[in-house]
Length: 476
Image (cartoon, rainbow, N blue to C red; front, side):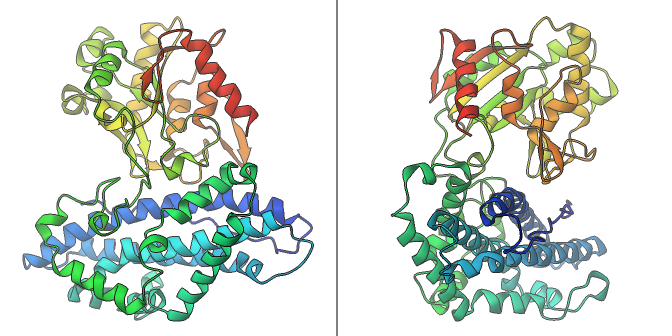
């Protein structure tokens, strides 16, 4: 049974609003930090549903809570409280902009601050609705989570207090006021402002929120009544098919996902012709890039590409490289022989997945290092496989050893390549855009295959690939 991953909650807003640093600069920094907090929440929701399925199944079968179950529940509540506190900081830090009439604050900056505060409030509502509320529906779990636990700094009736806050009429009115401000001011903004990465990210986070779309126009009693009626028809069997990344317990109610907020499916999703074409071109150690403009997480990632992964290779290839029986490779014989060949870092950690799982995307690029020797290729694959099981790096720091984001996987596997990095919030980071910079004409990597907008590009693919990178960099 998996336990909750301990996530590092970022301390926000240590600089006062009226500091020497301009408010506009402060907001931009806080949005960057806020993205990490949102990512942690999305991972938390997915893990919460996994935990609930397991423990609820045992309770329904009259199996008592084990010591491990109790540890998991305490860690989960502790994490929820930490996330909740961090989001409240965001909400209240910028809430004043709703009423501040100072002429020193321009309309764009004011709206951006309100959008950040509103986004945080909506994530708080969604975190309750899409994760913690499920424990309210079971008397055993509700009673346990309302008990004081001094060793975890959990006060008595915490679950009840969280539920009370969720149902607060005054808080809902405040959020409705922020929504009305956002909707009114948004219509007056210029296109250039609306299309900046930070604003596009906050806008999608707001508009795709289940709480924004499904609960705020209704009274709290109506919402709770509908919620309880929904749960009365949910069995443990139906839960067994829910809760993975991209699918959640409440998708039937809200039509939205726990972790991957998306507006449609990818243009390459389910395309057997595309999968076959890519499969025929793949070689062990290749780098895969993708873009999903319909997902929230793609909005604030710098550059054109949003995610990157490594292809392990087939059994035949690994035998030819002389590493099929290497101790690291042997651990994944079952996965590799069942077509699980992509190593990628997702919110739930570094894992090995099939190509089909990867292709819910619009754009795809396959990169291969020039003049790579078999010995180097073998070492790259082994280094990549060593990363499986590591947690997701919500701080996006290349200098951490126990956590990774997708582009850090490339960084630690291809150690003989000098990758560009950026310094952000005191940390050194690498993004898919940095990986893409190293591919094309006169670069150490070449583009083997390229799909854009669901269509294969057959001519001048290296030039076309590089033009995407240069355009996205210049527009950042």
